[in-house]
Image (tube, rainbow, N blue to C red):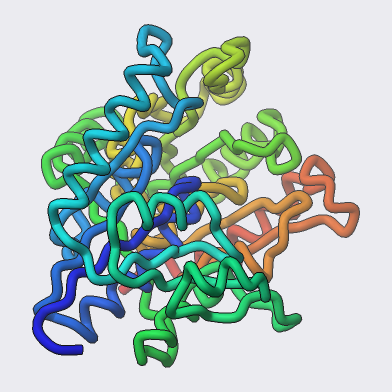
Length: 349
C-alpha cells in the first residue's frame, strides 16, 4: 500500500456494537499512523466516537426511525444525500463494513460514497464476493466475542493479533460538570456506584424492586453512594420509550439512601456520568459496553443474550445469568454477593 491510504469505517447499528468496533479503529491507526481514518455511523450512536483520538473525522446520518417528530422523511433522505456527496469528495481508498456477516445496506453505502475497495464479510454469495473485493469468509462455528468477530476484518489488510481495549473518551467539560455536581450532592468517601436501570430488550430488564434491594444492601455494607441512570422519556412514548416512571419509582423505594438521579438526554451525558463512577451495575446493553470502554468494574445482568458474545470486554466484571435465562430470576442476595467479589479490597491502593 503506497502513500497515505484513506479508510472509511462503516458501522450503522446500535451503541454497544459501535463500542465493540473501537479496537478495530485503534489497530487500524497503529498500523497506518499517517492514514486518513474516518467513520460513517448514525446520529443515534455517533457520540460513542465523538472524541476518539484515532479518527480524523466522523460522519453521521439520520436513520428514518430516529428522526424527530417534526422532521419529514423527505428531509431525512435529502440530508443523507448531501452527506454522501460530501464523503465522495474525500475519495476514500477503503470502506470497511465493520459488522459481523454480510452487510448489504452497508455495502450499498460504501458504493454510494465511491470507495475504491470494500472490506467486508461474505457468506459464499457470488454477487457479494464480486462487490466486496477484500473479503473475509463469515459463518464458521467458532464462538467469538463481538469485538473479536469484527476485528477479523483487519486480516484482509494484514493486521492480526489480539484486539486492543475498547475506548470511549468523555467530553472533558461534561465530565468536569458531573464531578462537581457529585461532589456537591453526594459528599463522602464511600464507593460511587452507577446504577443503570434501562435495557433496550425486555428480556434484559432486571426489576426495579431488585435494584432497590441491591442499593439498600450496598449502602448498609459499604456506605455506598449511587448515581441513578436511565433512558429518559416516558414508557408510554410509542416511538422512543424511556424509563422515567421506573426511575421515579426507584427513587421512592430508596429514599433513605444517598442516590442522585441523573437523567442523561444525550449519549455524551451518559458517558460523562459513567466516567465518574467507581463501579457500575447494569443490564447487558449499550451502557454496559460504554462502562467497559471507560475501564469500570461491572456487575451485569443477562437474560437471554449470549455472555460469550456480549460480556464486558477487557474489564473486571461479574456476570449474572439464571439458568432459566429469565433475568427476573436473579435475586438481590445473589447480586450483592457478586458485587462483593467484584469490589475486592476497597479503596484500591
